[in-house]
Image 1 (spheres, rainbow, N blue to C red):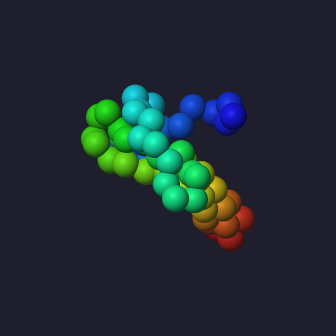
Image 2 (cartoon, protein in one colour; image 1 turned 90 degrees about the horizontal axis):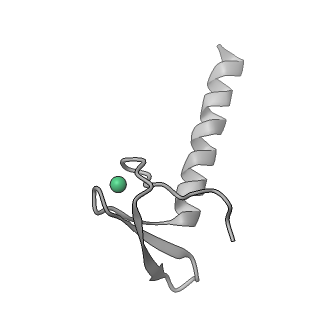
Length: 61
Ligand SMILES: [Zn+2]
C-alpha cells in the first residue's frame, strides 16, 4: 500500500471516502469537504508535474 496519506487535489483535505475502483483498478476517492471525486494516480501525476514546473521556473530564473 501507499504510505502517504492521499489528499483532495481541489481543497487539500485528507478527509476522504474510499469510492471503489475504476475499470483500470485505480483507487477512487470522494472528498468529504468539497465532494470532489478523484483517483489517487491522478493526484500523483498532478503533484509531480507541478513540482517539475516549479523546478524549471527556479532553474531558469
Ligand atoms: Zn476536496
